[in-house]
Length: 441
Length: 167
Image (cartoon, rainbow over all chains, first blue to last red; front, side, top):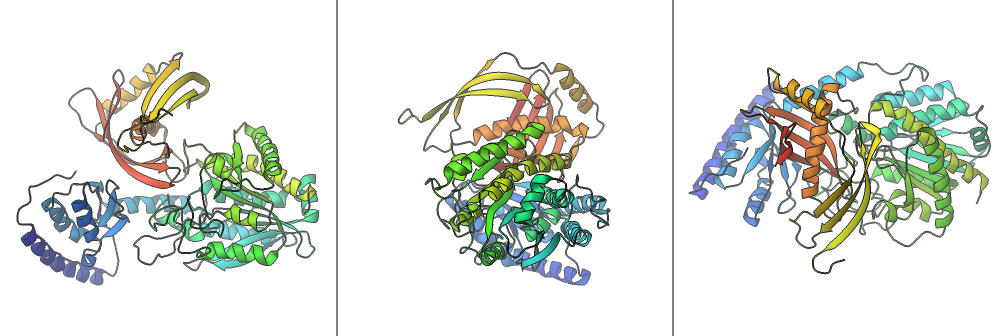
């Protein structure tokens, strides 16, 4: 815990502090070069909450002291907002002394970052000792998988069903990962199509997991389920399972609660853009943040994120998408546009009716309760959102799901709920797909 | 709307026992948000129409288990990334849930919607008296801003005296 010391000759102490820092850092740099690795042994994460302007200024100044190699997990935002900073071991004592000398209290959030990292690595190793899947029949749908495992699953599904499934690469991410979409088609050329995406927000793990299940379900049922068979007779289905691969990888290795993309933002230590605020529909308006450190940061301009641009280009070039469903978690909601304005969409009544039917179908399986309505009236104002853009492009049947649960586990939904969630959601998706099939436009 | 004083809401709600879906209790509440002054938590008056289930037995089992530990309890990531939580950690999680309710109340405005996202770290603190004390580092998820907010809270608990949160 932090404590306050009376401060005296602050000026002299600052100089001494700087000098000590440079000496220690030189030493640390030499050691690191010798070892050839970076570890977080002895690193601590401190929390500082600036209580007045002077403290805030002092804390902001810390960001400029590059030689301290401070890593701000939460950058200074304003009075009363917590500032979290990872402090390398050599910088610890001098930094703490500096804070105390300036009467700035702090608390130690993580006593040893390496210990936490080691623990996580161990957990991941334990769970990933399952090697890559060998077939989609032995794939475990009731557990969460890594990006590599999901990409391997996709290839297996295509290999096992070459007449129905193909894999398209629609772009690549900031960190150069390929972005894949599965296409389910019984033939024809540029048939009217249904688009489903999962995992646009990387921490919403039940969605990517459900996407994997949907892919398998389509393959399993495409002949014996009359509804699905008749849908595929007339339409294609596009399924993007990992819509934000960089974010997803980050949730597996560094921060389970990561939501955004992983693009660098000029002029900020913060990373990433909220891909569901980056679309060209009311872009930059109320319902998104201008602050790069925010989880709803809209980005420097619409479609700045390659993950978003890839879909925009695909939809535009395809030209025949008739239903667009973007899947999130959590809250148990079925939503239609708009999020950026209270003006109702012209097709409000029809979309509302479809939602009512879809939600009833979903509930029929396990009794899971959903609410439905437009984004802005049901959840909150959100600008630059996916389905606002797709609707404005003329894709009438644009919907967003928020899957289980309502907060008990939130993003950390137990794996045992993956399959039930996917099963019930599939019933709702079929309602939307059937309606789209029966109401060509 | 009561003018300068703030906005008052009247709520009819149903409490459901998360450990037993069939056990419900009707409640009504009056919530008064104070505008402008962001440091004042909303006033809440709650009326429970009926009785909450008696949990003495489970409370005492948990209390005695912790009291008889040789080393102070330490744990992380409850639930873990995959939503798993060991049975021994359930009461620790429930305690955090109750305590975070207090923290959430103290920090709520009409434009926030908090949930407890995860316990990052919990450490039992040895005490001379009868209370159990835990130092929690939790993550709160704020729905409107979508931010994940780390929060440190110190929680005291005793089967007969209930939960107390000292931030």
